[in-house]
Image (tube, rainbow, N blue to C red; front, side, top):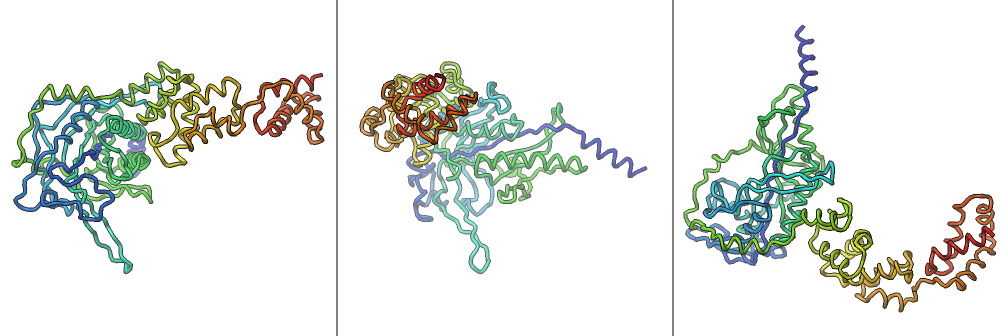
Length: 500
């Protein structure tokens, strides 16, 4: 009786439809010339370990921090881009915890009075890109980064840790999201959109592989329709968008399995192990009171002038999601193509400049998405560093649509323009790639191809009703003309002669 009841209870639990509840905490390194509270350079990536340091960022006794105004501006700019309110009063706090990468024993951060609050971020819905999802932002606040621990295993197999303090004290924004995300794919879209925004406004590189964008995910599940939140698990050590999506998807399934088997989810911190594709327990999750926050006594409170906020707001460009929606609306692009073009502000500007130079929106999108991005990827450069100009792409489109350049030769011309900076018209002229549309000239080539022994089978197939055989003959003419023949004229001539 007991065994039967137990099995029925397991089946009942297994039938529960769970809803994931996900909130992201994203740390964004701010691009400034100096660190957050001292004059040390903030660009330390290529420096030898522990060389870009001073008594302030090393946490020496008796030193005093001095606030970096540029970092405060960058945080306010980011907050405005995320539709946050910017209060008139803010302050810094000490967040106390003991860890080797925190030399002072506390981190200067913000707690109850941050620089911003109550914002939102809009993303294209991964389930339906034609729709959007608005996801809440709790706050964007400013703090100092920690040192960097490097875990080493020597030849004998012994492990130890080394600490590089160059990163310590660098300005770091934390973007705390509301638990509004419901799928791993939404989390990936949120993170990509956030990276695009900080790049658009120029406050960070957003490069996850360099640690400029770091993400922790708070994941819980609850029965669908329930209002109460389940126990929250924080997932760390995710170093790419793919890792974030995989780790969250794994954690959702792990929690479902624990509950279906009659277990209980405990509040803890788990680390993502990329090689194994699993999360593993690291420690119990701290609550805010565990950090013993109190106001930073060595820094004055911040009174944020409204005129200053309005001046910062005036610097905001058109942001990725509004731009994506406008590209769909104005240029007739698909949501997916518009999303790719607006991921980078420089690419989006290049695309619009191509249209202004005379290219049709759809044709310009095709060339940028297919060929320009391919060339940039192969060269490992950004569009700003390329010799290719929007006018070059527009001129290429005009040459193709005007019949002066074949579609087959156009990629070669574009690549030459990309490598040399020469205009497509010049490349076509120098390489002799002008498309041949002269009927008399092409008719002679068509006659030679039809008379060639290797064409006999295709001719016979066509005459027996196999229309596709004409493709072989068109290809033979194109090969003989080195791709310069106008395919439309060739096709017309061939069918005239074959039908006769």
